[in-house]
Amino acid sequence: MRWALGVDLGGTAIKAALVSQEGDREEVMEVPTQAWMGRDHVLEKRLLPLIERALQRARSRGMKVEAVGVAVASPLDPWKGVVYHPPNLPGWGVFPLLPYLEERLYLPVKIDNDANLFALGEWKWGAGQGHAPLLCLTLGTGIGGGIVYHRGIIWHGAHGAGGEFGHVTIDMEGPPCNCGNRGCLEAMASATALERWVKESQERGRTTKIPPGAKAIDIARAAREGDEVALEAFQWVGKNLGVGIAALANAFDPRVIVLGGGLSKAGMLLLEPAVSEFERRALSLQRERVKVRLAHLGHLGGVIGAALLALGEGLENHDKVREEEG
Ligand SMILES: [Zn+2]
Image (cartoon, rainbow, N blue to C red):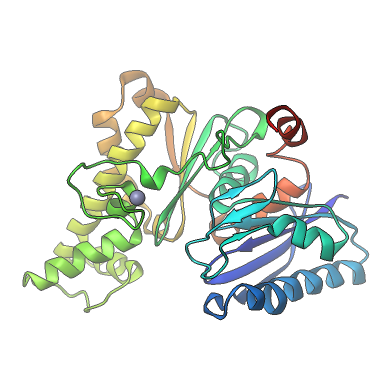
């Protein structure tokens, strides 16, 4: 049996699991990132010890790990393995993570963006199940995106940064986004956007059972209990999401669009208004054929995708691309 170690390096937590080529998962581990402590701390005190511990467990159980894959919440060059100013990992700057890990692990290492690897995981063993092209949106504090085209190859674009669906403009005059633009999908359909919409309604004096400072999970609970403001908030975010996925469906003509990330746990509260807006706006062929589904792999999607990358999926032609493009 072939095994790889999949690691998901996020701003809040680092997750790891041993994953087999058959999709078995063992030794799932999670530690807080402690990102505020800076790059050296995260690398030396959090990431490397977690990887060592997982590899140690594998050795003690007689499992031979052939490679390590790391999903990073950052713009990056997957070929050179360099991350560029990860927004949730302060002080990292431009950092050659892949060479750093290869030097220390004595194992082949591959890295890619976390949303790309989430898409890869969903394509292989999740809501996509081998259907490509597949688009994936991870709906959380921000919105990440990934594209898997034929046979599980991730679409990286020319500079490694393709699939940033969170920064597609859906309203020219919309609210400001962290990227400096305004009206981005991320500013209008993320958990943060939902929370801000509720906060503004409360400030305008709307009556609601939602407590002040509520998170998306609290708003979802209130919506299920029939709270008007919470229901309207999900209608607004879902509709915005539908505008975005209709644009993506028209542009890419994928087989499947997968919605993952923490906010997707709201399920039908989000999916129902999103799909109805998608159906209103997509071209007829896409409206009839493109399937919009909730992700299956949950919070381990990035870890599983990272392990798949290590096992040879996703970047199949990566040495060739490096050679051709320089
Ligand atoms: Zn933006």
